[in-house]
Image: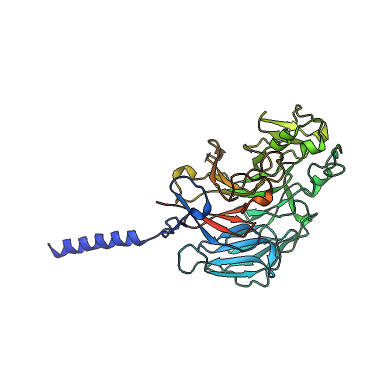
Length: 427
């Protein structure tokens, strides 16, 4: 073999070895699922492992480009409302935990050089270094202050777009805007005054400190409560999951049976833009009739439709399942069918009696060109630890937050025992 040919052969060999040992952002290190897949039921080819456990009431989560995890706790534990998880040996399990931030809450999000986190009244941001670790945990910037907290639907979920805007949920402090909240026969206030300051999504500047609630823009309205929301990069649009109203039978027993109350209304996925009105409290969505129905507080009887100018939902899910997490999947680890589709974490119901409670799982909705392209399906089940949940307290785990790792893994938080799950595709 000539010297020139030998050099070329060695170059090709070296290039092959280098390619085999190089991992892109969506080419994960092999991570071994737990033997029991962390107790989860998953589609063929998927596995799961427990990253961390016993953290406290873990709400939303954010995963950095380095694979570290920030977890927002609903209630501060030992004076720490944010937990930082690190995996030093690459086995997928957290082996180092630190905490900071003395406020509870739900929202947390990494964008650019900052970590954003919310309490039930404020939004803060922390500066990140090149490794996406916080440079000063003691002195975050206060971006927004004075958000309404009436101790009902008080969680301030948040997300950012790519144009420097921050979107924050301000849930309605009411079930259906009755004159006397959750009181049988009480009629709805017309117009509903709650919508002036709650029941929608507010937009703020992501880089401006010291904004007050009144400085924000009411971006979308008619949303009783949104815990799960995400910015769809493919569509450059905000998508939200609404928690539907409760107690149709309890409040209007002459109009709705207990069975109807358990099955109505749908939990709905909406695509919203500035000025969108999704119709709460005047209407609800009936997934069986596939129509927007006039709420009984406003003259509805289960047969009258309403909300001609309100947004139509993109997907209607079973009632009362509490969608707490929404994530559009952009990774390449999972099979092609999951690309740009939506994962939704359902926290689980409390008011489907006399039926069993429902939810407590993560579902998937396929998307194409920014719209659902097929039926939704249960993706990850088994969080509750029991086949039938009669009472919410029976559920051992309740999914809440979702995040995508740099390798394309899907992370799920649980706010009962503070478990963080990682779901991987076993290539």
